[in-house]
Picture 1 (spheres, rainbow, N blue to C red):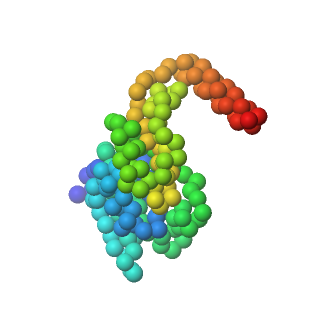
Picture 2: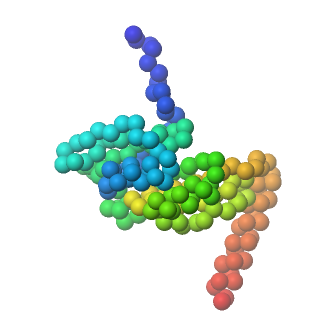
Picture 3: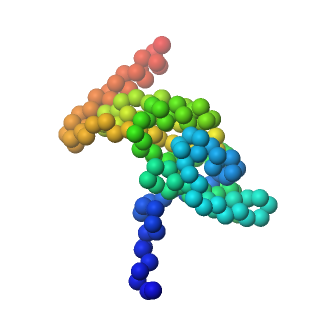
Length: 164
């Protein structure tokens, strides 16, 4: 019946990350182990490639595929220019679970000036993941003060390392 189709499909939000990976089948298994993902859709294509898959992580979907045609993975491109930001109930537990599943820790979780406990890692397929648990609502003026203090701290740390 015309006019009854939802403009955003059930189970999706307005923004959905789409990752291209070198081995989608392995990536799906990794995301299941690391982030408790559930597989919703898998479309197999020629030569055993996955041309489209959808995973549920928390309340959001993640789409992914193998490298096909012009779509290249971070491994083929020599790095990534984007990342996925994932809010979870317990950043420390999720971070350790992802590292245990094969992710590389790039920044262990710590408390950040903007009110999140936040860490970063790289999955085995070259994608950058920022993982956070929101701990505090910070007013804009307070956040600005904290940001400047953090920038000053980092600048001093950089000077100390350079002199050392």
